[in-house]
Image (cartoon, rainbow, N blue to C red):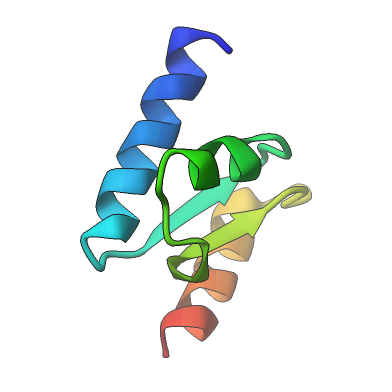
Length: 67
């Protein structure tokens, strides 16, 4: 694991562990690592393949998850 992946996983674990929400867009391998660091995956939207418009897809998925 490189430093960037570790930093992202730590940030997601910190945010979701404190009751916040997070989204991971375009990263297929971050979920398990993030869970191992203590993330609450029920508060994390994982969008593995967002297609040609990642911002719209992420917004759509996250807004439905939080509502």
